[in-house]
Length: 600
Image (cartoon, rainbow, N blue to C red):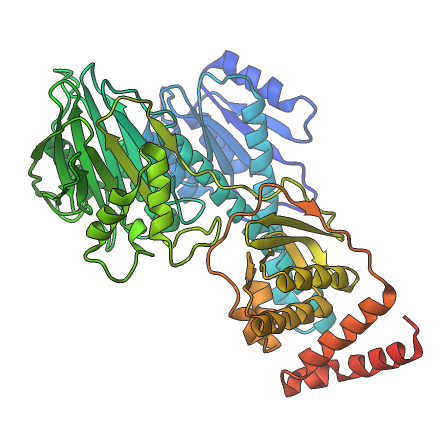
């Protein structure tokens, strides 16, 4: 069995390529080895690969899934049990969802389909896998050092700082992975709506985080029929997103034999049985509604699995609600779903919505669906503009620009009026694609209506705090809300921490909104340790989008302004607790002497 000990810090990485195709195997060895600082070995079968893995530790294994003697998944399972350690990159010429899920469950780092479209993706995957292995090896090494350094305080502190940097790197990687997952999830949603004869369909999608549990689909089934689907997985974030993707993978809109569209009741029954077979856990369920639209007969056949009622707006001003016809999906396998057939007239509109739109509805005015019906009935716009206005109306209690919703929001509107269909998947502005130097700091500033946003990148220290403070105060004096993004902030010194505390006090006095987002656990611990409860209360639980245009903040300020601010904020910090007084009193005394003498 291969040794489980971590590789030496400077050991040359070793790759193993496993493929029964000799030409492809030799090509991969040659292409991957060009100019790279690692050694590559190869095996022509799973049996030969087992022998290699048993006597040699490999950093990365690249394997084909389909081989004559034993498949790649079986080889991964054996290695997982007997020779754990390598990062696995799986290649397959007939990739399926099941194979991908199984490979990922076994710990595969990446999953690529053959034939490869060039080798850039594979080379990049290998580099990322090696970087991942180095992080794991560094983590294990730091753990060992921590255990050995308990008796040596100065060494212990040094290791803790390095462990903190490592954890920050891992947290940044997780955050980046979630952002990429959000991009992938949006790519699975329809990008262009099909055009329907005599009708139009519009969709608006707003996740509450990078990824969400809502989904929708608009599918042209034949010349006269189309399918409209909306779903909402229980919960938020990654688990809800994965459940939504799993649900979408189980759907088959057309019978493969007859080529006829499945009836809505059949489609929901089949998806429910598949989900019940694949998942078994508390809280793992989703609601969905599916509508089969016939543009020739102008009918809509609807089945709903525990989903909020669809709302039918008649041309004459009347409204009707189509309630769920069966339980949510994933609760029990033998559920049935009834159908309702609705005749559509020119000018009618049929609205699908997820319950995320309920979160900020007015308290009075009937049921949630009645409030939505009333709001949309008042809109003079049609199509995507009407959906945007409906979302704005539902959030009238919190009218700030670009605020992410508490829950995922999806709106789908079928309009029995000739016209062009549109989709808005709500891609929010990403963080600026720029990274500060590891030891430097950059402060970006941008504006949206009613709010000024600052983003602190790198290490925030006292030299930049005065100009940052000045700009924040100017925004507050103008009655503008202030948002500070700390997603890419690596460190804040005591002057910056005290500046946040003073800005919170000023915002409260001026009755102006001041909020922080992207706060790491390390910063939260600092706020708590220093008794900065006012700052902690202003940390928002979910990320708000940054302005699309942000410019560097000029950090030039005169020395006396910096010295006065540094003294003032440390005096405030010292007054928060006896522990703070003991910690900062010597520094405050020194700063007072410097300010009095003018030596700054």
